[in-house]
Length: 457
Image (cartoon, one colour):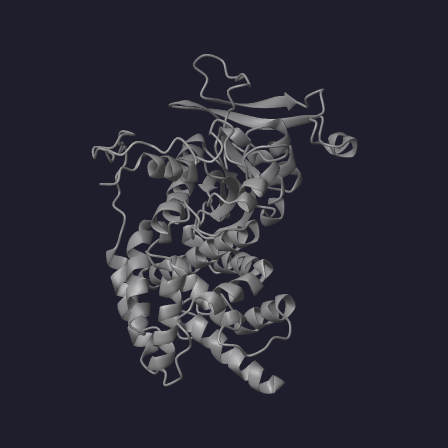
């Protein structure tokens, strides 16, 4: 019996991997090794029954759910029913109850470990030409997402204090570490938007294990604090950030750059213990560089190895993290989540990031095959092409799978992002909003008032 379940698990894994280009004959076809996924499943799930929705079927269905535009549980279950019929199996019930219970059972650790496996594995096989001066560059940034207004979500992720009770939505803050070369997510920290240790600095401290010695980190001015730079330097990581507005530049008038010294603040932050404060260096040697709109600060102090213009060009690429987060929130619809409990909310965020990494994997395969850089390909175009091929079953295991992927790669290469330097857009919309006013009271209260005022003939 256990051998039968293992064989079934292996078939499910092979099918899931083939849908995202994990075939030996394809470039980067071993980013998600079969044995690694099997080990993660065994570690996180353990022994389980062979149900209609075993862990990997649930995982695969969950991934497909967040990759589609509708993202409803009903559509996800209907796709499973159709797939079983197409394979000659007995159709399962179209009721969503079994699938929703299977998602409840699916460990969040399984999704997170797979997401954290795909990012570094893809980075390890990235082309040298995709890197900056042979170094891996990571992007860090924070964003927020809104959740359904349920008591459980409100308790874990409270809504903004400026919103009245019953008319606002819970909010969660995310800080992610992404690759500049591949666009893949390496790690994410999730927390509420208010309370102690909920800021982007606090969440970034949870992600330092995703930064390795020799790497370079790009971020906005929020991360250019003494403590952040010192932590990165102790790990052998260099950073490039705009100078924070609370710190004065040491550059003289007309001076383009200079290597300067920062003294450790005399007051220990409330979040830092005494031992950590003592371990921090007494001074930091950093380099200030004048840019068109402000000052950049970096720990890349070697002027010959890292010229000023090279650093300025590198920092311009920080905008990729804004675009990548927009892809995840707008194109993949993660900006407004659907799950009703904090546990499922975490899984929903992680499954979006895992699905995003798998799409990025296919984009990297197409880029490697065509000699391009992944960030020049359109994520939206890649997602549309990939889901279209998957919807027709063209990426299931078969003798012509390699040829089908070649057609997919050619389609992805056509979806390129144009080189548009200096492009700007106003932060305004042309289309007018709906004539209906905003809801300013709890929905049930508004319903009761409508019923009271309803006139019967």
